[in-house]
Structure formats: structure tokens, C-alpha cells
Length: 475
Image (cartoon, rainbow, N blue to C red; front, side, top):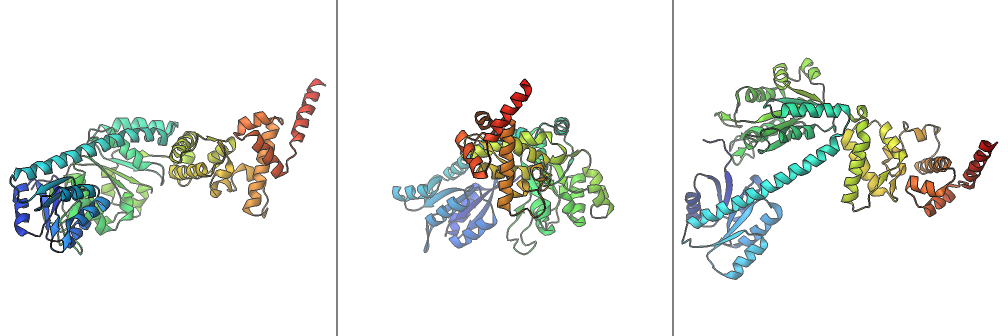
């Protein structure tokens, strides 16, 4: 049996004769399921992903148009061919409006037309998928430049990626949660000889052992409860491409034995099967833990560790590559300004200072969320510290609050205190020049005056200060 994934076709008709006809006519190139009723068809659709559904519009006590509408709403990746013994234009138009791609009339005078229509739809699906894949690759390349940054540490990693991408070797990526391990894995794939094949990512930490084995290896019908049909696993789906296993250290020792067999022999067994299947995938693994420590404490197999650790990429946390923070923050600001249809915003010096001094335990993911929060709340052309999430704006490590004493009051008072000192420092630096202060802060002159009045700031003091400074220089 070939390991290649067959196109799956669902045929729904109340006539056993018609179902057999489709099975014979379409034949071996397709994986065909049949249903005699809409109830049976709905059950199959919930369990499988079909490329095409061929649906009879007239069923005893049922209307095939209902199923066509459901597929269009819930399974947009499934194309539909409507069939009917009633050759009316109205019926065909209704089916097409609800989402059918083609319409065939029974009895079928030319059986080859069935194959022609199926192949035509599959070719269209392939072209759409290929176009989406290419667009995604282009977009991904753009996002990668923005997300990864330009620190020496990241540039060094990029050089390493370029060297190993073309070599069909295993890779192990380590780093804290949110540093961009999956981005690096995709970057390796997109620069490899496998770039035109699938990239499949699996988070091992979120899955039970049974579900993980079923997803990766596939399963045979009846191999466990709810295994109603044979299921293709990711080792088959990603055949010829790249399989990315994140949080690899969260897997069980029993699973690790099976994974090691795949890596060493290129074979695996579906759950419930006694036959080996071959696979050709490049495997990239990742973890946010110290994998050597996992080996030492017995939760990760030493032989699998050495098998995976052919090439190791360690991505340092964001707090250790502060050179990336500004470029990342600027990129995310532009991204969310576009998303929320706002004019381009800038980051104030105060915001940049906070971003550079924050610990970023969630790394790039946390920074991205913080900038989105700030863009949404920003009322001026320049993002201010108070626009940032409270855990960043109100953290004790941030210098503007270093002088706040314990028990200084609630959040509103603390925010006012910060704003007051921000505008005081701004006016001091600009020597009371509101035009210059407006340019620096991105706040209009009128709003600057209002802010000062609301906060009780005597701005005339800063103009006097400028005069006194000039007199001192003359004297």
C-alpha cells in the first residue's frame, strides 16, 4: 500500500446502486466514504476532513440542500458536487447559491464526466492552496524580519540557520516560552530543500500520550474508543516536508521510544496496526526546559537526546537582547496601527525606557500583547507610559516610580503622580517652550495646557527658569 495521502471523497445518496457506481468509477486514486442519509453524512464529516462531498439533493424525508449549506458554513475546505434526478435550472441555481461547486444530473449518461468534475475541483483546490502557501511564505518572510530583531545574538543565529537549512539534518531549538522557537523552525523549513512541501507543527505539551500518538502516527479503525475510521497521522501528512515537535520534553518515555525508532529507521506503525509504514520527514524539536537536566533526572531518554542534538539553536530571552526591543516594539506598533485603522503612532521616550527596563518573562509574545494594548488605548500621536498594561506601567522596577513610597495610594493617584512628573520633566527639558514640548511629546499645544492645568502644574515657572538661566549666562 502506498504511503501517499489519498484525496478523501464523501458520497451521500439513498441508493446503494449509486454509491457503488461512484466507488467503481472513481476507483483506487481516491479514499471514498459513503452515507445513505444526512445523519450518517454529518457523523462522517465530524470525524474526517474531505476534499469533496458528492450529495444527492433528494433524499427520503431530507433535503440535500441543507447539508450543502452546513458544509459551506462549517467545512469551507470541502468542495461540493450536487447530484439530482430532477434536471431543473432552479434546483441547480439553488445548490450553487448555497455553496455547491458543480451540478450533475442522474442518470449519468457519460460516467467519465464524474472523474472530469472531481479532477477539475481538486486541481482548483491545489491552485488555491498553492497560492495561499506562497502568499504565506512571502508574508512570513516579512514578519520574520520584524519579529526576530537585529541584535548580535539573533544575527548570529540567522547565520547558523542559513548554514543548516539546506542540510537535511535534525535540529533542536531551545529557549524560554515566547522567544520565537516556532518562527525559527519555519525559517529553517522555508530555506530548506523541503520548502515546497508541508510544514506541520505539533505542541506535545498540550496533548495526552494517546492523542499524541494518534495525531502523529495515525490510527486504524477500532484501535480505541471513538476510532470509527482509519486516520492519517502527521508523519504521513508531512511526508517530504518538515515536522516540528514543540515541548518535546513533555512527552512520555514510552512515546520517546517510538519516536526514536522513526528517527533511526524512518518507519512507524499506526495505532492498532501491525505493519510498518515509511516516512520521509525532517524533524525539528524544541523545548523551553533544560533538556540535559531532563535527561539527568530520568524524564527524557539519553539516546533520544543525542539523536536530536545534532544541531542545537538556543534563542536567548528578550531581556538579554535589549537591542531587539525597540525594533520589535516599532514593528508591532505599525502592525496594530494598521489593524485598528489608526494613524501611525510613535513611542515616547518614557515608553521606550519602560520597555527596555521590563523583564519580559513572556518574551516577544508578551511584548507584542503590550504594544497592542497601548495602541488600542492611545489617544495621541505618541504612545505614553499610561497607555501600557498596568503590570508594565505600574511595576516597581520602572524608574519613574522608584521614588514612590509604600502606601502612596491607589492606581489613579499613582497614574496622576507619574503624569505630573512626566510633564514637569518635559517642560523643564524644553525650558517652558510649549511648541517644542508639543513636538517632542506628540501632544497638541492646547492639550498640553489642559494637562498642566488639570495636574496643577505652574508652567510659567519653567519660563521664568529659562529667563534666570539666560541671566546667569550673561552674568
